[in-house]
Length: 125
Ligand code: 5GP
Ligand code: ZN
Image 1 (cartoon, rainbow, N blue to C red):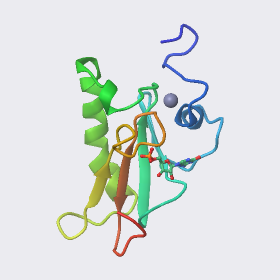
Image 2 (cartoon, protein in one colour):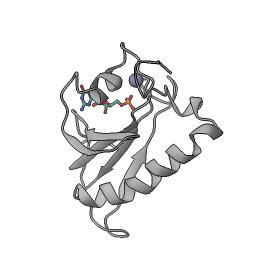
Image 3 (tube, rainbow, N blue to C red):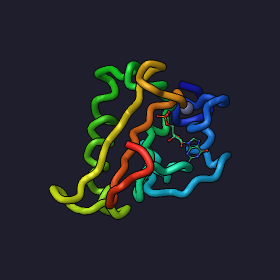
Image 4 (cartoon, rainbow, N blue to C red):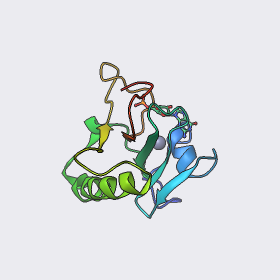
């Protein structure tokens, strides 16, 4: 973690640049630990990403020191899904996806949770 910034930041990382507002995005939610924003290329009527503000490359990098952060994200997701227009469970709901590593289909190596929902059919997923 850098001495200059409260959170670890990788200057070459797209999602770090989005968190730092160096690249514009449509905000869904923000607090000290996380940033949520609309996916630029949505697969579903609702499709947003939630990322830790700190640069954590993937789920493969998660350890016990991240338990509180992971819990925070998991508690936020149901609330944000409804806020963004996902219909209520069980008829509605949403899909939660975290691609991890090359074989897991991860393109951007800053941990992110996709939340996708809304009426079907969807473009993908
Ligand atoms: P991955 O394939 O790594 O799981 O997902 C990366 C996601 O980031 C993709 O769904 C892609 O559409 C989204 N994405 C890529 N570049 C940008 C961008 O500049 N802004 C936003 N809002 N989303 C992006
Ligand atoms: Zn990053």
